[in-house]
Amino acid sequence: ETRAFKKLTGYTRNLDEKMVKLQADGGRIHGSGYTIFKDIYSILPGHYAIVKKDGLLAQKRWWNIENHLWNSVPKTLEEQAEQYYELFEDACKIRLVSDVKVATALSGGLDSSSVYSVVNGLLKKGNLNRVPADSQKAVVVTFPGLENDERAFAEKAIEYTGGDALFLPQVYPNLAEQITKDTIMFDGLNPSPITAISGIYRGMRENGITVSLDGHGVDEMLYGYRDMLYNLFQYYYKTRDLQNADLVRNVIFPTYPDHDQQRVLTNLNMLMKQARSPFSGVKAIAKKLLGRQGFDRTEYSNSSVLKPIGEPYDFSHFSYPDRIVFNETFVETLPDIFRNFDLAGMMNSVEIRMPFMDWRLVTYQFSLPIQSKIGSGYNKLVLREAMKGRMAEEIRLRRLKIGISSPVAQWVNSKLREWVSDLCSSTQFRGSLLNGTRSADEFLQQSANTAAGHELVTKLWMDINLYLINKN
Picture: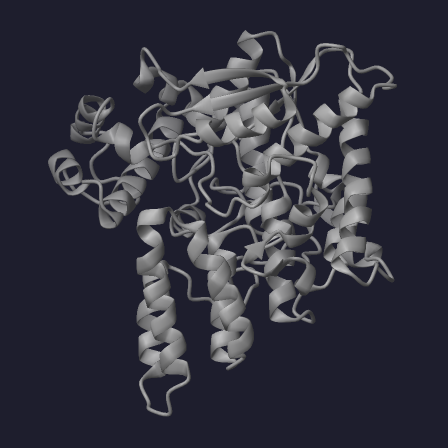
């Protein structure tokens, strides 16, 4: 852990300002072997390290996804889905083997609900070795009264299986104290406190659960995030592949809440109309509308400011749509998520197991054509097809994307307001690395519940994040 370097004799731990600012601007550094601290690196994914007698360290790659792609897969989506399900069910079965009871962190989304449904199906079949009888319980984190509360969806998944559930409302008697503790143990930089994630596993541990089956990995492999969809749309738009741009447009707007869908659809329709127009000005409109979403990438590759270390992946020879999923999985988003959840689980002594990351299932998904991953108004197409008749239909076809994260904007403007005001007003905090000398009053006055306000709160939080891990 990077915290250990604070105690290392002869070494003073300092922030690497370039890495901090890169990550604060939305860059991903963990999968490239970097940390936010000077001269502290992570062993790269799929690598091992050699330390030589003279003290030099070299990292060598031992596993490469390209060496494990399938030579052939079934031709139809239905056949692919059946093979997918066989691999997925076995991946869940293997990860149920335990000497203690196992639970699932259930959000009510497609991914975690799929794990929960498959596991309950396995338990009903019986004939499982070394699987405790009181597995499997759903553990659901709820945020009463907030937009990111997914309790209603989780309840539908539970109702379908008839399984057991534990609901954990995220209500903290001393929120500032909990956030401070979690952030110090996390010892990294994140756009929101890790407290909401940590709360899942803290609740499990308090209820005697020490192993959790979670649904991580599918979003990155099957176009589950909006930024992936926008970049895919932009690629088809710029290459004038308007048929596929239409296809992606029809996947993007349903991922938003009902009250936002029409606005998003109107913007995308405007782009499509301009693309079909013989008049000029298309590029300017595209830049304005797509830039407003925050996604304007023409390449999917590591940032040029990161000097390559070890033997990094090079996916440049793949098509752009393929580069999106390869990079999100192996270089960018998923390595960060693994770090976050591993730390959240371990700081509460809970082991997290991930069936979707079974290497057989991963290599199978990367061997499927894009038509098996996105189409007919849906992303994660092969998973949805595989789960037909095996989980609640409303969840299987759910397209709204929320995700688990701390509602930092709401907290800053309510329970944390006084704490944030006091902290930002302190002499130690002023002149911080990311936000200069802006006062607490400026932050709080401008952090209303708007998109701009949320962005401001995120920047404010990251400064608090850095302050806490440096100070303690």
